[in-house]
Length: 380
Image (tube, rainbow, N blue to C red; front, side, top):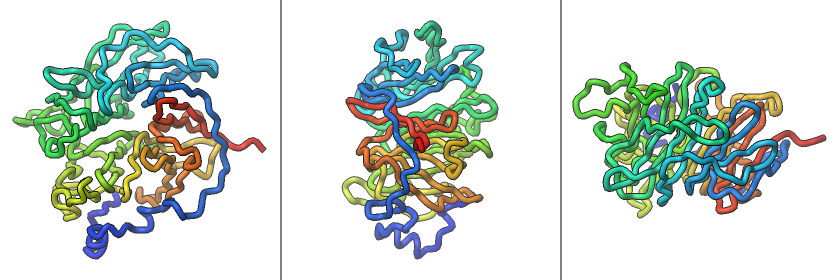
């Protein structure tokens, strides 16, 4: 696995001076635009800050809206009535209804999983729940996990949901805007948690049985992870997270690893002050696979596979909120990023989620009048 921790000291010094490598800047304004070998189709608009797309059998879609609604897209049209049966949701700050993912055996059990911000004690925190999606409604809703402790802030809830090939369930949890929490094993904030599909803790989670550690934690030291997906060939869990001013990261998540936030970072504080140890290497902490400085504010992530765009096979797609584009990253055999193409910049839309289905790319734009877009080949 390629690690930036192997960089020479000169490269570290260059980063400390905020001199960014050409690769980290690939696709910045001024670089040659990518050839437009695709077209963008608007499938639906009028969405209120949509957050996630879920594909169901029969090409039916579900779309979560952050204010607390779940919408159905069926037969080419967005249904007017939201899905009933959601629990009470706290749409505060960056929180609300977040990710939504069907169970791998959804056709058999109808379980739909979703994350959301909700009250807990005297604060608000990220929750994971599931319900049976039947007859356009959620039934038998049960909360499977609550990130503890709750806090009163409205930032950095995370969160994405991923099932791996063995049926384990992963949820990304943000640091809630309180940086030191990401280094605490007795705190879910700033971590990736791993569960069975019914919310039980797997016996082989890395911190099971350790005093003062939350057994759900699989990895920690992350800031605000809003992208997570499986590599289609290796099955590895990939994650990306928002940095502060610079230092957005892509990581490959492994059991028990510490991803460094806020001790090491490729970004600086919003005040301009350094964060923690800056770029000083720590033997016990992972360096990212790739990073962006300045920040693009990444959200949503998917690997491309499919026949419509054969030249993109294996590329990693990442939405950008701040820079308002869709990044397409070409990887080498060692998972190094060798090039980056920035797409959809002409739309000037915040890209919140990206998914691939039957070789076509589906994108959500995060606005009051949010859109569901599809990227497909140009018609000759």
